[in-house]
Image (cartoon, rainbow, N blue to C red; front, side, top):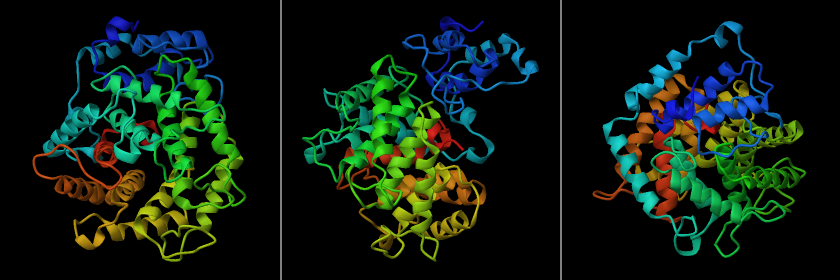
Length: 414
């Protein structure tokens, strides 16, 4: 039987991934919250888990339901699992699947390691990130937390588990009764950006945190997003906005997908209306306009976001997706000055997700180009990237992009 003693020998990254696979095997019936809690404590002994906790591999419902598996699989020898854990920490080559082999090379590994260490040093006493007017910004804080999660750390576990935990604490402290996650003293382009990124991050952490209030506040945050969807089917800067834009909309649908993955109820109608809105925003060239009421030319950053909306909603084929991917392939990163944009990191964040979902030759062409472009943009001798939106933001985005082949974030998994 797997115990806390057994699993403690494994690296935090391996423990996270194997839990998502092993839990259904050890509890094939999938209907016993008590048994589920016992299994999870074996993997995360420091976590305080309630019977409401839901597995990421579960069907997206409100009660904890683990998928059923073949009775033959249920008899998988425990010795095999113990042997996997006893092997100790894994390295990049062990983590890679055939299509990711060699993608994160030694240069990228070193850059990620140094950047995450630098980012950890930037966290403020209250758990937030950001500087200047953006100090304490909830979107920046959530993205920094996502960068640590993308490397395999979880709340209080892993090399940056403490930073993840403190970021969770900060966002929970700034979740209002309405469900809005905001620091009203920090500069913001609009609170719904922060709402989307913060809700996504909290949903990714849900079930691995010892804070009993996490689910309660996460449910409130999700309800605010659902309730603030406007008549067009999208979202904009404020919860009471009457119009929508594709940039804010992608933040909300990603948050809803993460919440649904974590077992929080998300109405199907909300997702369907969002998909229809995004489809209407697509231009004839395959790219996307910013708003329906102000149709503009296609641009790469928001078009990458538009394609990710479709994938996030469970659409994996169709004319809209094919046209969108064809448009994006015109913007394979190449380091050319004319490709510069104030939204460079935003575009790469969504671009790499789109190509990760697309897979195949598109992914094999895109990721190495994005990796090399990012590494070339970092100033010599420094461990971080810079942006008008703060170095914390740019570094977090760069780290998330570079770590996509690790495939640790459930929200990015195919």
